Length: 232
Ligand SMILES: Nc1ncnc2c1ncn2[C@@H]1O[C@H](COP(=O)(O)OP(=O)(O)O)[C@@H](O)[C@H]1O
Ligand SMILES: [Mg+2]
Image (cartoon, rainbow, N blue to C red; front, side, top):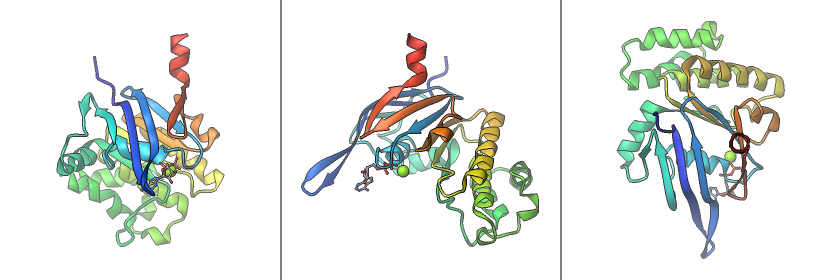
C-alpha cells in the first residue's frame, strides 16, 4: 500500500516571544493520502501558513514529525530539503512571486530547466496553453493582470509535475470572478496530474472545492470533517 503523501505527527511550532514561547501550532496530527485535495481553513493568524511551510520543509518543527511519502524530513540537511522541494513539491502563493525580470514563459521554463527536463521548451509552451496564455508568453509579469500572473504561477508550479502542490491563499489578491477562474484552472491541473493538493484559505467557499476540509484555530486542529464521516 502507498504511504500517505503527507503525515504530520504531534507537530508543534513555538517561537520565542518577549522572553517566553509563543505556541503557533500545537500537536497537530494529520494524514493526507496521495491524490487527496484538502483545504486548510482558519482565521488569519491561526497558523495556516506556518503549517504549509512545515509541510514543505521551509520551516522546522519544535516538536513532532513531518513525513512525505512515508519519509521523515526533519532530520534532513538544507540541501536535501531543497532537492525534495524542487522535485516533489510545487507552490502557489497569494502574491504570485513571479520573477519580474523574466517573461511569463521564462518563469515557467526555469524550474523545468533546473530539473534537467529535455522537453522544457515544449512543456512550457503546453503549460502556457493549458492556462490560456499562449499569446502572452513573451510578456513580463508587470505587463500582466493579477489573474494572468497567477495563471503563470500555476503553470510554473505544475511544470515539474510535483506529486504535492501547496497553495497559500492563491486567490487572496484577486477579485472574486478572477479568483474563480484561477481556482478552476488549479482544480483542472490537479485532476490532470493526479497531484495531492493542500489549499490554504480563510474563505469557506474556496475551501468547499476540496474533497476534505480541516480547520485550524489558535494552532490546533478543530475537526477533520471527512474523517469523522468515515468513522461514524
Ligand atoms: N516569524 C514569526 N515571528 C513571530 N510570529 C510569527 C512568525 N510567523 C508567524 N507568526 C505568528 O504565528 C501566528 C500564525 O501565523 P500564520 O501561520 O502566518 O497564520 P495564518 O497563515 O493562518 O494567517 C500568528 O499569530 C503570527 O503572528
Ligand atoms: Mg497565512
